[in-house]
Length: 470
Image (spheres, rainbow, N blue to C red):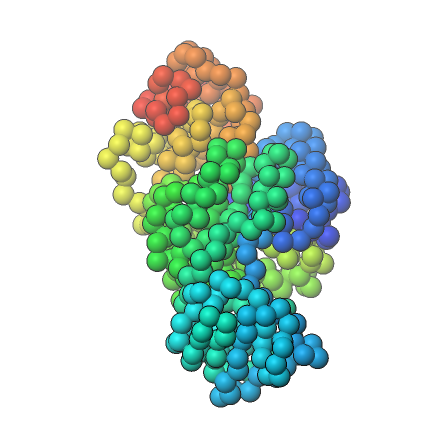
């Protein structure tokens, strides 16, 4: 199975898409990566879904990547008297360090870390930003805040604190148990929620090592302040526009999205654009024009992947949503202006042999009208360097490591294949031609560009480029 596009599609599994028949239809419709959302579902449910993915992978003879999305810390208010309270604009309300309200008018907030980080003047958002307050005074056990946007407030609503960097780990005890389960299962990527600082990535790295790629979900303003360090330390990022759009003004989200895609591409790290991309298809068989434009914008920006959440997990039209996203991506990439826009955003080549050879592969392939760039890699780094150039020919990524095969599925333009170990130039040229023909990229007489590192099998040693006629 070959895709007629370079950007990838991530789809979230849930009640609407957990049957084998539906999952198979999703892969056929265009899914490259399945997301297991550990904010919902049991370990048994996720284990069953994972097993079906691997069965389909073998049946369809196409690698499918699995992304485990950890829940992360959740800041919520406690139980209110009578289950609800009405907030009136202009009034001052008090939050108390309690699980349940002990005094009339108080709102319980059972999170010590909030009281440690909050300060007068900070914004206090509840229920996805529907209720907005501003802190006027605080102590070790109370927070007084003036209501800006009010309304009815019910039990256990989520809290967002855009001006406060909370002294909490992104990994709760639940997350650590889920992470151990996911790693044992064999997931390819771990999405880390609530990332605020570079140290959060280092903490996760100690637990994950090289068993899976680490994806930092960018949803906190604090992360934006140190984004260069976060991107440097992680393996990929997700622009989680849902929570990010609550904690920063909505009008800033499009610009931030472009900055994050640009920074990730410059670093050679894959980036996913997520949240509400086809939200109307939760209940309708066709998207709005604005949603189609939103997906196209992410593709023009150069994103490695676009993601569906509720649309495939709980929506009424999961397969149709994937098929629609697939068509939008294909149409965008075939537009007459696409190549010029992508080229204009091209990052500067770093002054290293590895980056220079990888970048040259793209230029050479275009000049000699090669049918594909065949990249041999042991860690995936060679392919990521080629992908950051966004070449106008396909990338055939070859590695002996099945774990790396699946991880490279997320990379822009990469068609990944498992192969035997390569020990010589003769074997390399032979294997490149065989795989290019077997995967439908070339026929006898066509040219391909081969990129590899010598000595073979050493990560990060990209230093060899050859043009071969099959």
